[in-house]
Length: 365
Image (tube, rainbow, N blue to C red; front, side):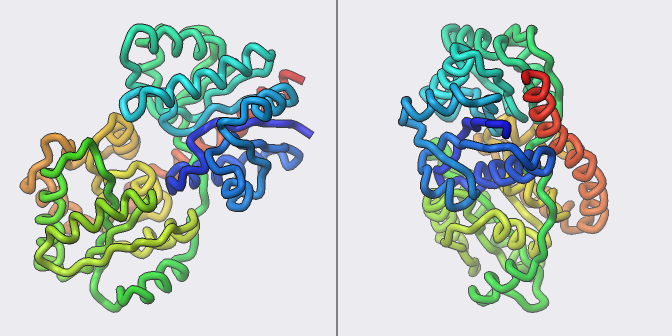
């Protein structure tokens, strides 16, 4: 039995990160059915229930110490753990877990990480030291590899793969249709999903999205559905935008499982999203997407499928977003076909993360 400890932003009711963990567990156990996985989580009971793995609290230093002592490998990732734009403290936490594993002689793999930005001389030095001590680094995009080079991380093997969620298989849309029907959404009218998040208390981008959503209802006779990826935070932001609209829209308020969210996204004719993993869900389910950027990770993912964001939240205009919607609406079939082909290639790279992790464990033994 091989023992892996996984460190990441898990147990915090963020649908993208929970999907990432589900995908990692699924692929790791496919590659090595004998693997024993322990997850460091903000809510161990919830993580154990959702994913069927052992989970320990991110604050329980004694349990983390014991798990790392028994582990054949620490996986740090996936996601945007190693940056200090959204949170300064979290970077030091995740690096400290890596440092503890290294102190105990446990090999470390940075798994499909989205690296940076890392700001500040001390943070960059700490990041450089711990990353250079890893046995292997895979990153989910070329921009992250450039960040590592800029940080002068040179010692471990490094490879560009893809976000772990891209390894998930598409699901049937029946579950999503049932959820939408329960909210009186359906029929022959097209459905446009919108996934948003709060960012720095800004209000202008919310007004822009509301105005564009009104156009979607009036110009394209579509139904607008707000899809939360983190509950309750995204629900609050969605309701704020819905109140700014003049036309009717629906805000979904429940916390959904990964399969339910994938199924819901699969029912959409178009998805507009600030949330990265909502965009990735659209890629998995073959749904045309429009990304709105607040972080380099959005541009990096869209670049991997030869697309660009419609705009940045700091400067987003109605003209930019409405132009992107109009173009996408006229080219839905072509966009869908292109994205399905590109995402298929990314899926193989996402699976490679798990294959590399298992190979690393076997080399260590």
